Length: 343
Ligand SMILES: NC(=O)c1ccc[n+]([C@@H]2O[C@H](COP(=O)([O-])OP(=O)(O)OC[C@H]3O[C@@H](n4cnc5c(N)ncnc54)[C@H](OP(=O)(O)O)[C@@H]3O)[C@@H](O)[C@H]2O)c1
Image (cartoon, rainbow, N blue to C red; front, side, top):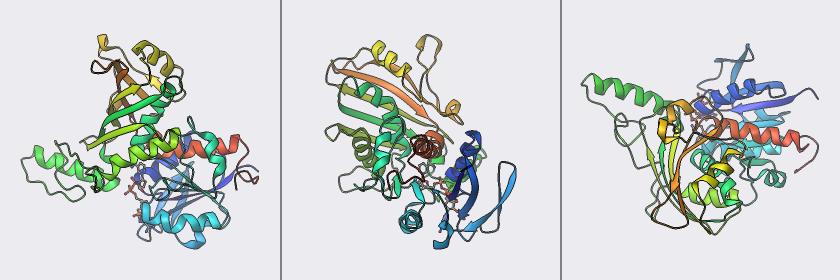
């Protein structure tokens, strides 16, 4: 076979557009590509490898003959169409939260738990963007010194909400600078020049669903049900690049130098850590890159086994499209696609 028949569901969205870029940039072996979205976008033209591809409405028939279906069109669409796509014989890699905590669905970061892919029954879940970058930075440390507790605060870019939110920040920023009133549509309050400690809905336990995703998904990916985790997730007026301040309590002390040594060897992680020259990860410079950047590594003075760090990644790439495509690449590398492996 020369390549795979790929469908992108949500091809016109922020993550869908990134899927297209990542597939092109990594020369993913593609025989044919279907660009799927809602009926609103049917007939629009997108480009793949300099060729025009017409966007089609997503229907149950869209998945006939498809090998790999990359979903990023929201939870409801995934819930309805993913089982249909899987039933048609496609392997679904889903960016929504629809199936992440389903025990029958692997939740995968290829650098951490690639073996879990093998257990799939047609659907593989891509974790939440904030979770992916956190586990990428923590798992290399957890492997040598078990983590007991994590306290994380996130500073999440508006592209994590989708294209409407990017438009809202742009419009509001101009309005504020022109002395005009703003009107929130996507978020409950103005996002321009503001910080909103509310991502996704509030739960009965007073955490938000986004915060709870970080708790549950981290445990599932790292196979570490006992880790205590508390997260606070905030939306900030940044276009691309989620930042996280993470406090970690290990079983035994770990020096900042040992953490730096381990992270310098970790695949997909890049250290940017030299306070003397103000070198640390920043959201704007993470945009368009593939690595998870780690810096500001220091002892947590409040705990003998504690470390603190600052972690940044492009939420549309490693936080979404790149991780999903790496899952497909891992399956190809291990011979788990189209040869009966895992199904
Ligand atoms: N942005 C991130 O950082 C990120 C990270 C991880 C996961 N995700 C998840 O990825 C999904 C999409 O996010 P996004 O940021 O790309 O959102 P977005 O920019 O708002 O794009 C939404 C996409 O979904 C499509 N869509 C909407 N209704 C549809 C329908 N009825 N049938 C088929 N397609 C439909 C849209 O097509 P039209 O153009 O036709 O409306 C568009 O292509 C969400 O589940 C989100 O939680 C996002």
